[in-house]
Length: 283
Image 1: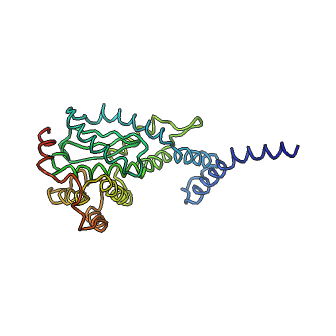
Image 2: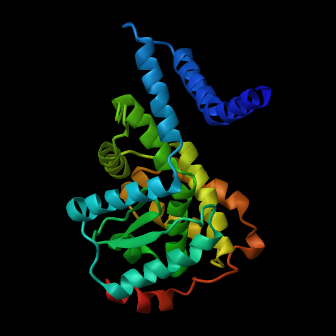
Image 3: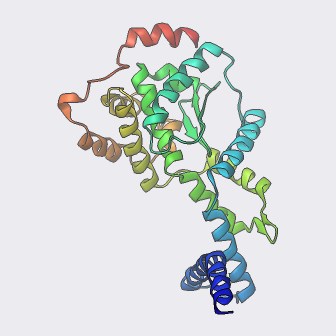
């Protein structure tokens, strides 16, 4: 009898203890935040706690699936993928070279060129990275393109959009008793990817991750700094790419502090003539 009770307790402990602790912690966090003037019921608090647990434990597979749905929405309604297989293959090749050296190499990555003369690049969830023809036209060499792709991979590795999605989804209440409303998550994710800037902390984090990634992949690290400086000097206003990337001057200084001047230009991708013949001729 004692053995049976002991076995039951061990099974119960493993199955329910940690979720129960997570729920209690989530509710405690909610209770620690100053409440609005109107009363919030304990049922609402428990429900919000469940949402936090659900959204904080998105698996890689779930994130990739949401990213796929976001990609379908973006490419069918928001912008057009540039119809040049050679150019898309070039960008994808550069991106895939970076992936094994990134902080999150174990998910599939998709790199796509967007037909847009504006200088821009962004990442969504689950390995989807977008770069515009305008940015490719502005870049001087492959290493500068790799620096942008590395930065966007850094956002994915840091799960920055996932964190934003979690915050907004909890505010809007997209979960229900059956689980997370995935279609709502996709809609919020698209909205965030297009319109909401990353935090200063997220940008610094993506910069540092991107610098490590491109250097590890064999690209010259100086290209990340030179492209940011090019963006700042070459525009009378703030480029779209920087409008959602705050404190660019400080970011450049932070990057320079991480790069050894004696090895800054050591690596691949700095040949401008090769880049022009391979890429700019296709734009």
